[in-house]
Image (cartoon, rainbow, N blue to C red; front, top):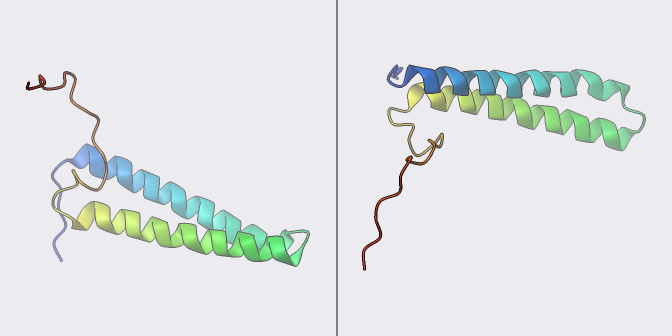
Length: 85
């Protein structure tokens, strides 16, 4: 596996997004035991697990893929190209 460092600002921003997913997922898992009903506890647990998986995938993809232009969207160009007739 090769870790790519081109586009470092985008990679760091995406890593922070992935860390945020992980924090929300860990909090959801830790608080699922305090849910008022078993159904809510089950939903909170699986939401947390889903967010932790998304966190791992976001961080992994961010550093292990060479071209991020098709994964993390870039803003559109300032001026669109002229239309052809």
